Image 1 (tube, rainbow, N blue to C red):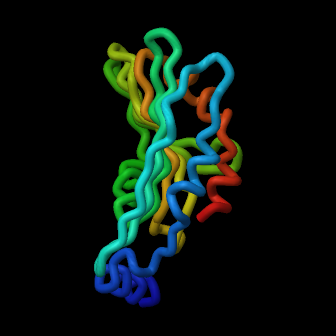
Image 2: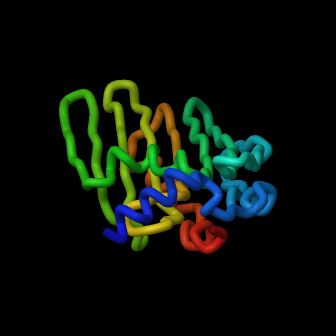
Length: 164
């Protein structure tokens, strides 16, 4: 019953339950990485009568390899985590979807093997056990998922979590 009431409250109040930091304060967590070229951090805060969100992004490249790192907070963050909510696992010759625990965080990975691109999703904020309100995302291309995972460990997931 408590979960039902919480969901109803979120539906009717939308993002007004969330209080997110200014995007400029999140840019400090998207640091430069040795050996990688990095774009400037870009971001936004959005607030309306029905929703609030924050988003920051920075793109890293080295040769043909590219990783776009994004921190998103708001009601849409749960949609990024949704494929992994039930710890779904899939492995075919073409793609892999996997949930695993890394650095004390449950994370999700989607990887397209032949094309060598995918995403790593790290929930960094929750409003309730089943309601993710913030994610750290790594969208990578021209890389193996294990290399992208190692790259993701360059960022302080715990400090990003604390920022929410």
